[in-house]
View 1 (tube, rainbow, N blue to C red):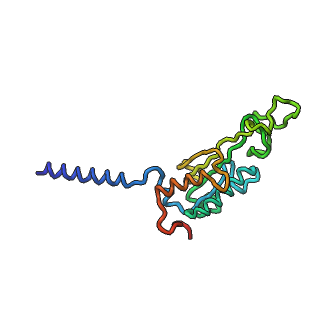
View 2: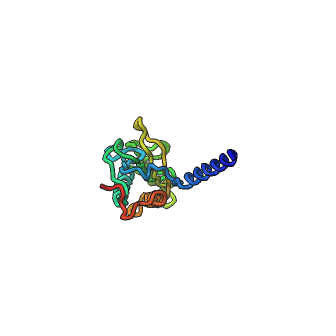
View 3: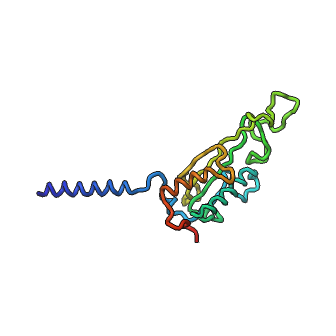
Length: 193
């Protein structure tokens, strides 16, 4: 009798554990559900960094606009005040070409020729589409550790031209994943004041 009772209890506890495991939201960590604020920066710094080039600055501003339009999270004015840190990176031109303003520093990019001689046919031409390829755009989401350093990423993706406004396809992908794992309550914007 005691043996049957133990087997029955074991079955009940096993079933409860399986049921609890199935009810967990797969894919995204629950920080996305609990978060209320987001801070957006580039991999090279935030909007206050004067060395930030135009592409990275525009990517930050476009992402901030997209997050405000989404309405699920509000923007934090400082990294330390945010629940989630969104790091954007607008892909730079590749294939050996140097384009002013595409480097996070003010100097030339190592391994690239900053000045081109128009008479030298061996150097790339800006009119050649093969020489104007870009790296993929990236979007990563982090949390902030107790030490003030980024933890994660807890979500990331990359895509050709994924940060071009107004479509912001990388943000659309993040929104889809978050809303699928943690649907907004009826009425929409759960975390706005």
